[in-house]
Length: 182
Image (tube, helix red, strand yellow):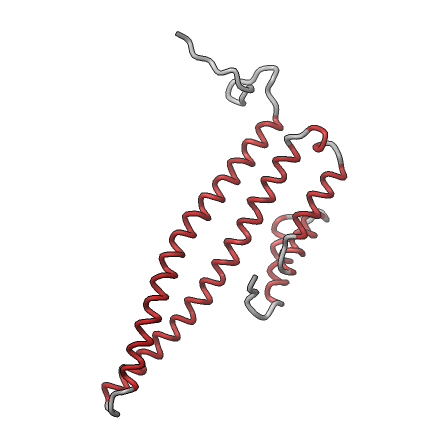
């Protein structure tokens, strides 16, 4: 019994039904799936770290409170200084989690943008309509939450190379003083 599929032609065995647009959409869908799987894996790890740090912070507070009740001694000073060091490291970990959150949100925006692009490319009536492309670009740009990303986007649309756009984005990011929480 010879099993054959009746689906669309593929690049490995093209026929008259083969389409570079369909191949492009499949590759875009693959990129979206990989991004989403990576984000899911990262979220699981970060949740474990968050739970661990929350528990450690609670333990550090209990130790600090207990040490505050001790009489003045070298041991008390050692315990309190170590508690302060732990609390400082916890602060650094919170900043790292904020950067991870920013990374995760960027990857989510990228996945949504690629998915929207795949939808446009796979619809012939939209594919050849410049207004559809303009709408997609406006939709993507509107989701950027910081100036560095907007500058990179604008530079790419103006014809800049990836390297040039990254350089513009880096300069804009350096101009932003604080961590952006969004």
